[in-house]
Amino acid sequence: MSKKKEYLKLFTKGLVLENPVLRLVLGTCPTLAVTTSALNGVGMGLAATFVLVGSGAVVSLLRNIIPSKVRIPAYITIIAGFVTVVQMLVKAFLPAIDSALGIFLPLIVVNCIILARAEMFAAKNPVIPSILDGLGMGIGFTATLTLMGMIRELIGAGSLFGLPITSSFIDPMVIMLLPPGGFFVFGILVALSNALAENFGKSKVSGTGCENCSACGGCPMSESKPEEVENTKSVTAENTKEQAEEEKQKKEDKTNE
Amino acid sequence: MQKLNVLSSPHISHNDTTGGIMLDVILALLPATICSFFFYGFRAIVLVAATVASAVASEYLWCQATKKASSLKDLSAVVTGLLLALNLPPDLPVWMAVLGGAIAIVIIKQMFGGLGHNFANPAMTARIVLMISFPTAMTTFTVPFTDTVSSATPLAELSSGTPDLIQLFLGYHAGCMGETSAALLLVGGVYLIIRRVITPTIPLSFILSAGIFAAILGVHPVATILTGGIMLGSIYMATDYATSPPTFLGQIIFGVGCGIITVIIRVFGNLPEGVSFGILIMNILTPQITKLTSPKPFSLEGKK
Image (tube, rainbow over all chains, first blue to last red; front, side):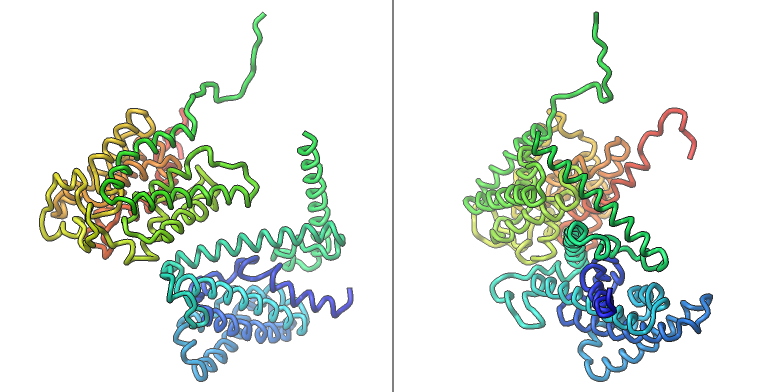
């Protein structure tokens, strides 16, 4: 695979196949808490993206210097630095978003997406892939939060990005702005993205073979042990191939009956 | 020569089917439903039709979309729709009722695996969703035979004085469509107990504990039992098989828990009615209650 393609894959995997919220189920707390409106979702997502990219780059640069025993405090310090920058910028230029996000803006420090990407990816890869990974993950995070915010705002308040749409003729469902509504939307989106990724993975396996297999794309374990990635990839690819064949046979049996 | 058939258990079978049980529940609810038609007229018929149609249609569409065998024949969607309708105020906009039916079936029942896998009673949880979403529409009640909007149900008057108990028992007061007539709900409950569809454990412990606890807190105990959704909830919704414990002791804990939470919410909470929340909380605790009260196999008693 050429380098460009590899970079593109690093960037795009965070959007759907390894979407941090819906596929890796990371960062659930801010996701459920701030998505009561589309604008909050965008704000939170962009702030987290900035921190992801910045901390990914710095962690990657320092990956050979930081002793592994103290790596987590070191990562947190780096992340906290970027969060402080974001928080001061948002406070200065977007005070409305700052008051809407409240405590969840400084809490980006302990957002598990950022620490997970630092630990799993940036600590083991050069700078450019780490930046691309952070950018992809961040945009995936932003897109998901915006989508959730749009759904909840449209049904719960009858507006989109603050503009009234349906509120004049339909009573909005207030529950969508409350925690239960957040869980409803979150659960349904996770189910949909799982179904999508499953279909996507299957067609890829039968279509182009092992190289483009995305079966283990959603599994964070595959990145924690880089030297084993190739093996697990081929094994899962074979497994899914076998499964697909078995299913085909079952279907044929059924039609024969 | 006799033939030896080797079969795995269960060896004793019964003729009860899910559809048969659900049909019994529908029959038991009919008096209260017809009474609501009588009290509230055409709008009650429209609401019942809307929720039942919406529940059945959602069930059918879900089965089609997920390529499952259609589960319409077990009539559970009809029961859910009917129960939901009886839990709604008669003047609710029809689209909200339709939405409630769809929420009950799709989100609360089918997404958790369908009949028998739902963690909470679908009709009751859908009522809670509607209650939180549209608080004004869900608490606007009308007096039977009139169009007069009465903001105060007997439940709200409980704190100020004692309402007429006989009127409460017969159902001539404002409230949700099926909540009004305690007498007819009791008739249906007795029918279900005689048909052995439900055991009286949960309803009795629910109703008694609510009455006793209300008396302790200084609220009129009989009026507490006869108002609001205690009759409907305890007989028809707390006894849902999938969401209540199967053991005798577990059912008593379940019923008492429902009763106490209901009265606590009514007396101290800022919501007018606590039955649905009481049942929902106990629904969620059901696996734990079942685990605690399950009989231990012989020879394992006393061991951990």
